[in-house]
Image (cartoon, rainbow, N blue to C red; front, side):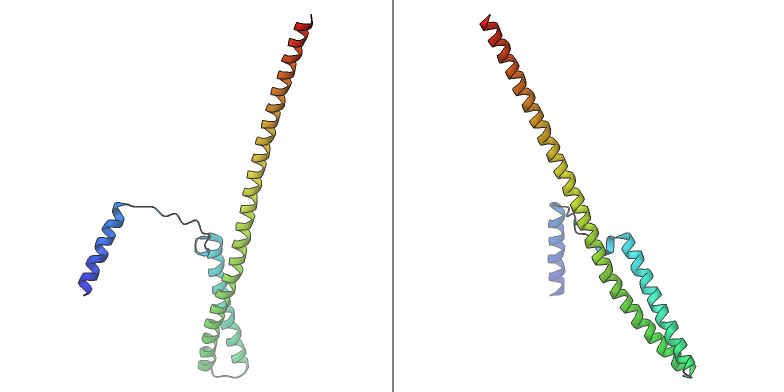
Length: 146
């Protein structure tokens, strides 16, 4: 049965290669944002290290045996690492949404200005055409009246 399914998948893959349609991903993703990737990694590392150091220091100051203090600090470091990761992702999602909204707003503003300039050029051309027609009509009327 598994051989049949692999043969069917291979046939589907061959059919897909014949009519290759390239799919372009237009979504903004956290995983493709270079500043976000670096910041999330830094935040994860710093939170994990901070949690480890704080809990280790508190446990050793509280006269907890070194093995238990290290174990607790490792657990706290892992928890802080995961919590920092979650917080960094939430924050960077909002930052990226804001950046995307700003980019869309700037793009729409450029398009609006381009449309406005095109309308102004068309209006100026129409006014020039009307002025030329009025001048031609006036000169024709002056020629006829003389």
